[in-house]
Length: 343
Image (tube, rainbow, N blue to C red; front, side, top):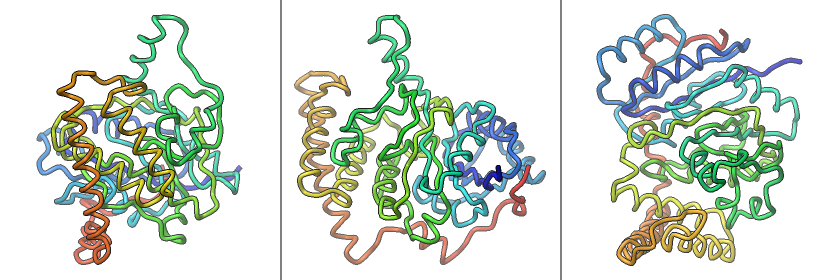
């Protein structure tokens, strides 16, 4: 079996020891043909992490890029433009990667209809929540996802890539563990939308919805798993998940995804579910039912809707790919010479 060459793309922002540990795990992978590209949006690293990254780059174990802006979709696009692999593998900078991870992703591409692979994510918080809900009984698992998981209007509340144990076709992947054929970008011209802000919630959902026009399937493989540590600051985003700014961008990104990709009926289904879950706090969100908090969340919901409308209006004359445009105007060289796609 001939395995494809892989480009592992890791955007990072103000992450120190978790980034080092992530890179250690990636570089331990026994896979015949892969490269590692780090798109670093960190203004200043700790001296020891700076020295570590410099050493890896000088040893040609990674290709390290420093940029002076922070955007997760922008960083992913930036990495793809510089990657040489047949398959683009995207991970976060706060993960634990088991042996055989790259092999698990790559083997799915022997099937010509597969254009993307969604891996399983052992998410610390979600696993803890399910264990608590299960009151200490046997681990909660899912075989077949429900039909709603393929409905683009409400799929995001039914796609469970944490507890699902059976390989199957899905409609979207999770951004911390996903891979795509290179031609989705280069041949079909589908790139991550840089209008998605902050932690870029739903930017991968938007990308997957647009990739449907290629005819490729997205295949979920639970063997392509990793552990996502889920740090609240740093990583792929430039704002804290507990900040008011995050709340605004969270709703903006959901509404933007819907307005771009869904029919009116599908949009209404998503808007209703978004309100029921994230504003009212009903399952599976299980948020506080305090009237003050509900009113506060409703305010962000409304402002996020208006903000997404504003983004679309501005896009009538500006496509919003500002980081791609900056890159075209002044491309940034790597810290060290580009490493070959091999290990």
